[in-house]
Length: 99
Image 1 (cartoon, rainbow, N blue to C red):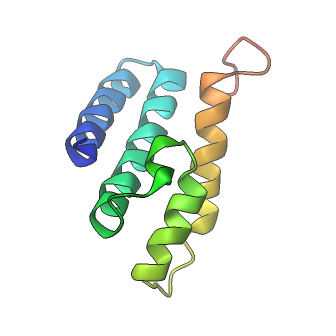
Image 2: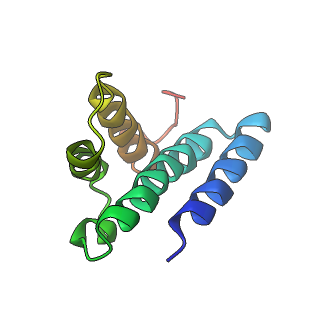
């Protein structure tokens, strides 16, 4: 699967949704794009990883850190993205007022 091109497509869609006031849907698609960008890198370093079949962006990121160490602590942002992805897809109050 071509994760990078899929991620780019989802990101462009998210931008269009945001510019038209569809914030909840834009957040969901933006977070999915971030997950797919991570998967695109994971598929290069470990093409047989089972993580590419999940939405587990946190563990995907942790696997990438093993190969590409960084001094920046990106994990809080990855966790926040995962939280927003879930809340955008399954809003608790049903109104979308959080957006």
